[in-house]
Length: 250
Image (cartoon, rainbow, N blue to C red; front, side):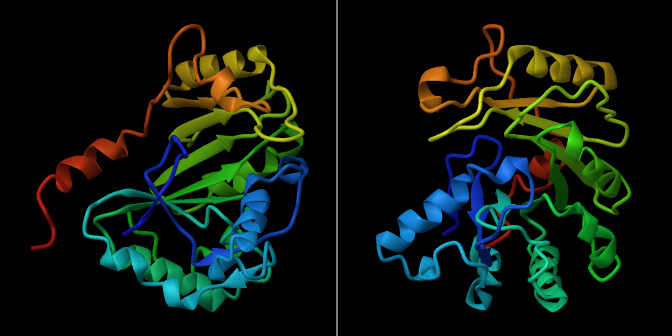
């Protein structure tokens, strides 16, 4: 079975790649790094290398075995476009996503400058969503690479949100996720930053998903924004659910 996850905006995770390295401010308190070392200490074979980049070819076809249609976060413990991941391996990941067309795959990267290098080498079926992380105004350059990609659904993960984004342009964006940093050393997120993004989503008619306030104890701070939760999803999700309402496997 797919690995269930507590990440609010997805259903399962698939990690044919694990491990990464820090490339920008949002990486400083990386949850995946903490989790990888915890799993290594527990004796989990997949994380014997800790958080060093590691390919797992034996897992490449896992989603083909998962009969129930689901939304899958790809490489939640790494970055598919890391410079040390060979093109051929990325192509194989895409081939699996192309074949497993009863699933939605969410690909999220901070290494948006590699998108144009790979985008014409793979097939972008409609079930592959592409997103970039933008934690502050300094890294808004990633959005241009996303918007110019062939992905059917393009989304932003503004998490951990570390600053205001007054110049955020949502033209060509299908979904926005916002969240504060959590865990040890979590940096604070200001409410006005979140409100500004929520209002910008309303202006552009873009679904808005508020993941968490974060902090050292994210369960205590919760997910409420002005007394309500925001769990909006891209319109494409409705098409997916309708087309997959009947079992695809006997």
